[in-house]
Length: 330
Image (cartoon, rainbow, N blue to C red; front, top):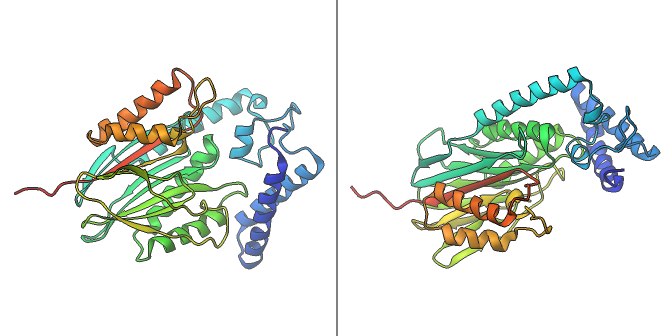
């Protein structure tokens, strides 16, 4: 079997308990359908058929099972018409994802933001968004997330994250409460093995940056003391119902920069199976921290490419840089 079912069984059982409770209190056909899918997957694990294609009876790939624990047929066993339909759906999904991305660089209330978004395939599970405030005096919201898994399933959940935070971010709630609400919604609406890591920033006009981290790689901060990771992380979204989240506050001086990234950067490996790692990432950031944000991101991406030396990436890659700008002189 491609993936050991023990951990999957535990996640499915935990999700079944949650779904059973929700189904009993809410009349929602979608919850009932999801509960039946979970029960079917648990039954397949018990008899040893989980992860085996129902057509060719061969183990399915780890990537597809991690993306969708309910899948029953491998890609190779799809008919010609089914494959062509899937390709059309992928192309449509890719267009939707790119349309949802923010501008590659933007300036707002003394902050400059730039991002680099690079899917491994046609679609991505990485989530980048900049939510501008509806009224003057409110903070700018910046999000970088990574949905577990790859491909279509991850991209669908990425789109779900986008819509969810667009609805939640303007609310008059603390950043901790915002993540708590998002965790509840994500936990209720997704499959048993689904979760997402996420870093959320609230950027205020006076230079304050409020940061919350739900299981995401530690951001890097370049300031007068050099480059260092911003410590502190809670559990990923959707992993535990009722999870509690924390936030910390930073104040950036003009010229100081935060760099957020997905693990497609630090966990990329070369032909010797050596990971790029946080040390190389911090060094690349330090060397490029004086550059404009688009050039900084390009330099960090180029340093990874030089390290890989032709080895293929194994994951989506996203980088987001945030810099406090010097006040305008009139």
